[in-house]
Image 1: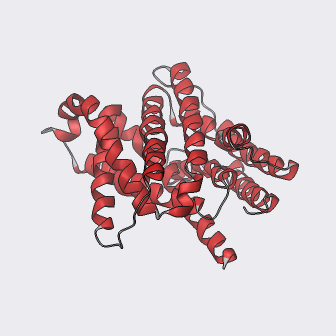
Image 2: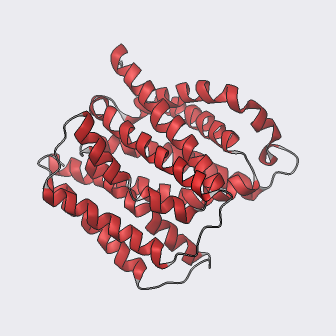
Length: 299
C-alpha cells in the first residue's frame, strides 16, 4: 500500500512542478502587460481561496487542532504570501532564465534547512542525486544563456534567493501537518489567511491594473486563469498531498524540472530551438529524483 502511495506522491509533485514551470513564463507575461506584482498576488489569493472553500463544501468536514491550524496558516503565509510575492517581484526585475537558475538551488536549500531545523539526514548518495539534478537544470539554462535582460538583475536574483529559502522552510515546517490533514483542508485556510494579509496592501494596485480596466483582453484573462486554477490551486493542492508520503528533500528535488519545462515551452512557441542539452537535462533531473528517493529509507 505504501508503494502505491509513493507513486501517487511522485505523480502529484511531478505534475505540480510541470505546472509551476509553465507558470514562470506566463507570470512574466502578466507582469509585463497586465498587472503589478501585488495585484497578481491578490488575484491568486482571492481566486484560490474561493475555489478551495467551494470544494470543501462537497467534502467531509475535517476538524483541525488549534495548534495545527496555526502551523498551516503560518506556513501558508511564509510559503505562499512571502515566497510567491518575492517570486513575483523577482520576475518583475529579472528574466525567467535567471530565475530558473536560482530555482534549481531549491533542493540544496531544502537539504541544508532540513539538516539545520529538524536534523534530517541526507546520505552521500542522496547528496549526489541532488547534485545531478542541479547539474541537469543548469546545463539546460547555461547552454541557452543570452545574458541578463532584466530591469535590475542583481535585485531580481537576490529576491529569487529569498523566495527559494522561504519555500524550503515552508516545506519543512508543514511536513507533519501535511500527513494529518487533506490538501483541501490545508489550502482553504492557507489562502483565506493569505487573502486577508495581501488585500490591504494590493487594493490600489488592483484598481490600477490594465487587466481590470477597459483595456482588458481575453489573452490576459486566460493567462491569469491559468495562474489561479493551475499554478495556484492545482499546484498547491499537489504539494501537501505529496508531503504525506514523501520526504521534503525528495519533494524539493523535482523543482529542477521547472526550468526544463520552461525550455520546452519556449521551443513550442518558437522562442528557442531544440538542442542536445534539453533531453539530456530532463534525463539528469529525473535520474536525480530517482537517486534521492532511493537513498531515503522512507522517501
